[in-house]
Image 1 (cartoon, one colour):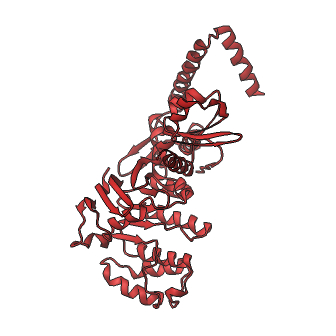
Image 2: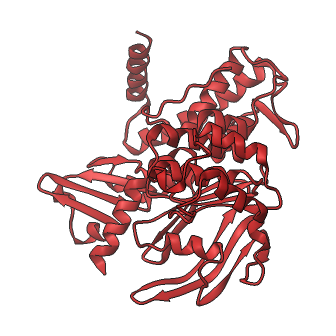
Image 3: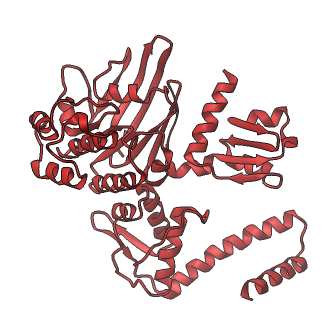
Length: 289
Length: 126
């Protein structure tokens, strides 16, 4: 399986924030979710892939070629959805689109019309008159209208109601019916990813926590709920993150088979959701720093 | 062909797909040579990940129930009902071996074991 995006030893420092030697690949033909709490470095990583931020060290390969400021051609094949509005507020939807279209060699007017209609966007409305959700839909329409091989989206589901979010998942699945096409999207709404993501890249505090097939996470991680009496010093150390209350504890382990043997008869053992994996990992980090 | 996925059953999604397709093949609802939806199409229809459906198809292939041909897709295999039944019995035997090992570990002898089995079996048939 090929990597459509490959990051090699990427580092970047901004005052107190830093990305530290990140290396990971995004698989061609699949949907990958980029997760992490606010400030983990998700948007910075995406901006680097789009050539909008330069890493201090390391390089990024997209479609098998190293990206550089001088060569922006690779972006012709990327549908990009930013988490902020980069359109001109004073223009109408149609005016803005006419301005964007010439940048893409494969711009397809028909497809664009189809999405504008499907998303119920009125072509004569000014960008500044659009709601947050509408702006997101517009941004999606642009990203989907030039035959992109790779969609890179920063928080595309933010500001969207649950109905459109589900419809978006359909659009994304539709996109990868062609196994040469790939999708990377960042989110903290992990329920979207629980459904359709094939791979999950988890970053926290500028570091890679894991890059795994979503399907294999349940074999690795386990959530334990039990009585506080079970926790002694050694047992505590096993947990990646632990939440203790007056009436018991909940904790995340990343060694399921061993954990199951130990806790099976004394506690509740569950398969954690992505959100729980994220919560306990971030919480655990905060505890031991 | 209908496949219904429960998000609350606790059974992994890939396993739900395997058992439903297996059932349809064993009951003759899907006959030899019937094409199955592509991995990507099924993922889209069920709103689940491609890798989940892939895993389900791989499992069905291992059990000899379907064949996948590169570039053409997956089909219900030509295996006859008898062969499929034998396959299933072999899987069952392996599970039984696990249980036997477990009962040995707990010091449960055959008499006690068969008594337990009998009780459970009767409970399920009721």
